[in-house]
Image (spheres, rainbow, N blue to C red):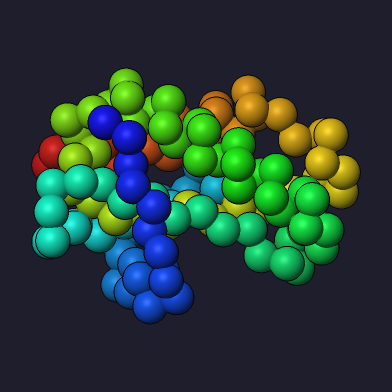
Length: 120
């Protein structure tokens, strides 16, 4: 199962304001149930104050989406029907210093925490 995109300012704001939060390294996750359907929705963000250059922000977001896609395939049934916003709280100065393996490590830990807490 591949998570769909979470779009729109209000959608992000709703999840961030009323969602349960989990952290994993430099990543912050906020999650709420998706009442509309069984599909999971994922939104990613990197604030400008964390990474001033758009090249770095865009690379981090691409790698976060790819890492989440891999993690959602592993944790298919546990993460069904949720809306997740993932924000990066630290970033290197150069885009070449961002690696998928680094982000994937924290993404998998964070999504496993969410899966454990959703099953309770």
